[in-house]
Length: 602
Image (cartoon, rainbow, N blue to C red; front, side):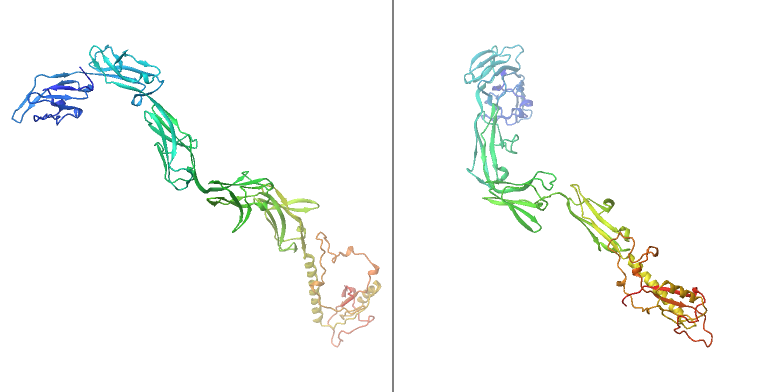
């Protein structure tokens, strides 16, 4: 029996089914068979001569076991001859198993190693195996042979043998190795690295067996840098995000080692500049607020500038990193931005809005067209207020006897046709989610209604007089008008008696002064009082409420109108007739007495 991986020679025996279709040999050359089975390719060689035909098989495998026959062929018709004898090849596969498996069978000092012998093939079960180190028998190895605290003295080449058959396995060499050590990182460029340039980091380590894998880490992160499993880490265009501490990890079958961190100093101008507002959420007037300018730069930012903007204008507000408002006011709200400066450049931040919330203030009420209006016209009350957030609700109040009551809501209050009872004092209340504020009271004065009544009365009286005059002019009788002065009530009685006498003459009597009519202007009608709560106009007083004042007595002008039949033919027209004339009205109903207030100055 042969051991696997040995050389085996067959003399003058071959089987095409095993070695190939045709085995053609041209003597005296010693070439390998030119056509062979793929499993034998590269492992067979012809070593025969004119009288012998030898085949050599190297690197014997367990699959090479079997019968080998030889067939001779010539170029003649039926020029073939096959050997009647066959060679049997029996192979025993004997080997040394090692546990745990290590690359190149390298083990660390102090490690425990297990060895044993195994056989496959023609070796009968129950055979005894012996383990040898460097030719020295270590004893039976049918089971695991343990080596404690492996060290260089225990290293060497180990083989297995079957003593009765003189079969030996291939040797397995065990050596003392070590995990990576002296692992370090070097940078291709010393000192600072300008942003935009390329840089290479190299990981070096001593290991036996050699390092199998590398990994790169940045700033103590738990996950490795992407695509960084090579001994070199190349950054083609270094940027701000590449600044930091780098270390590598080298690993082989015996362990790993981490290098010390190395700073990759990438320099760059300020970038990522932004404004942070503290505290967050709603900012109400009076609270403390701090704005912080944050920027990433290497070298660090050495100067800041704060600006407040309103439209296209801006104002400088500070030069520190923090802009603080111990008790912020409404006018300090608005848009802010900062600029960060370093020796390599500067960068402004985007503007941020600092909203300062406050309850309604400066609440006021205005009237359109005016707070003094004529009755029957329209008036609109408008409530104005400053607030942030904007006013959410308006409420209108009317003050009555020191008590306010709600009228309606909304920013405006319109009264379509104002009446005197709708005059009074009004105020509004503005509300948002921060608070409320009330406006001062606005007094609405209603005027012009009594003036209209007086004007209508005057027009009515004038129209009546005109109508009466026309009737007098078209009468058939002549009219005589006399003026008499009446100073006492007795004289009035006398006139009534005269009216009872006969007579058809129409006349007008003036008792003292002749009444002269003059044009009347609207300005002559007295204005109503300013106090809209007076219900009685001073110029219009009921007769029952007038008391007699002797000192106020003054002569009255009376107009006496007499109605009569059309005068008969030959009768004289109306003339001025003395009071004692006989031609008097027949009764008092025929005479109309109209008192007219005396005016001192015409």
